[in-house]
Image (cartoon, rainbow, N blue to C red):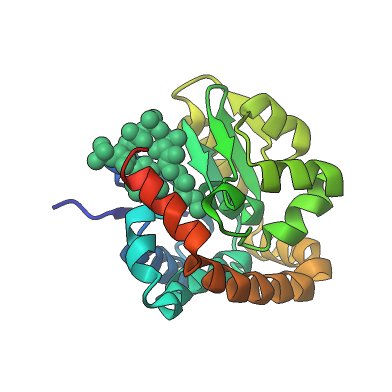
Length: 249
Ligand code: COA
């Protein structure tokens, strides 16, 4: 069976592909672990100057695997694997580029807040459905989305959780560029190639300087959100929402 996270390192660029297109690239704990391990090993690998994250097939990611959420409700501490991934992506020292096609849902959107350059195809759709699922925002999105767009627009995106398109994502500052359907990866690769030939240390130091002012608050938000998120996972509201999805209600 093909790996659910594919890794390729070429010309200084590590490409990580979420490879579960039959489930719209929904992410399981094993996949978070593989992503974390790949990012951690890239940190130590001088051959990697840039990391590019993308999804196989037509979608970026439908977010956390909801079937797995049902079983995790019995053992919410296992969610630490997801939170380790979020900590790793939030503190990743090398530039991160993302290529988004199709659906980006939940963590499929919030992980973009930790990327440095994001390309999304014009037909991509973004959804932050946490509250509809009885959950709360994660990935420090309760801090980073309001910083990006102000409280009222953040509340609308994170609490009403309605779908929005690449034009709005561009206007909100969530993505750098919208492109034609099917060319997000090629366009993201253009960004990655540009970054890979810039002076490596200067790029990483600049990223650090840009991130440093919010570093402590991001860590605090991650910790605060993960505590509440775990509690919510075991709630009846969440259970009902997961079952409704799984039963296609
Ligand atoms: N977890 C587990 N499986 C998922 C999934 C998820 N997050 N998202 C999609 N899938 C699966 C579906 O169950 C379906 O599997 P099946 O073919 O075995 O029945 C397959 O992926 C295709 O999804 P489907 O719902 O048929 O596609 P769609 O185009 O009608 O809808 C979405 C796409 C993304 C809008 C819809 O799948 C969805 O709402 N997914 C859940 C997103 C979500 O809430 N993520 C969690 C955020 S915390």
